[in-house]
Image (tube, rainbow, N blue to C red; front, side, top):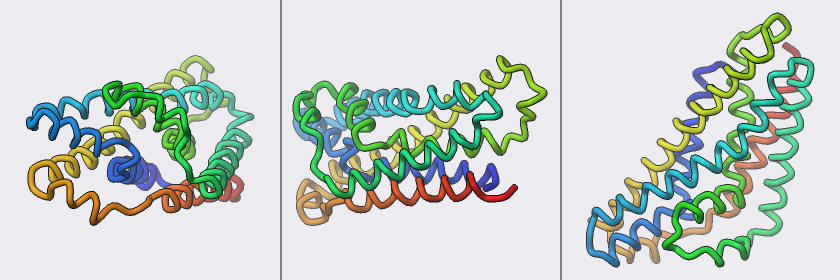
Length: 218
């Protein structure tokens, strides 16, 4: 896949995460309604953004350190795809939200956002896309110093996480604002639908594509 297509995937996955109510935008609506202030709504988006960004980095950074070893790149890509595929199957079979999420108070939005992104595999979904971007950079890993290569991968990891998270919070923030300002809470009860099956299917799809592209002749 080309770099442009992979960057589109980074943004698209961010928009998808942001629209998913499971990533927390209804909590921002709740904060705005409780304080009757749009400032409270936007204030709640900040910790949601920070938590999601940290969760993305927590998943991607270990892969960025390993990916600098040229001879392991294909096995790492295949392994990441299989891990994502397996997690998607797990999420499809058991769609209940992890109990640990109920133990984090809504006021702890940053911690909640971090844990929910990890528990739902949001960061894991981004790993194959990130690895594809690193592979498409055209770096000759055999003739590059390991330190420089790892540095480039770390920079790419940070950029991917920031772009993805900005797209995520933009989509979630717009939905939260529309519900708070115009649509009202009745919109949630009328329009709410369970995204668990769609979420699990997207995990499996990205994982399967990652494995297929990693093993395809180059």
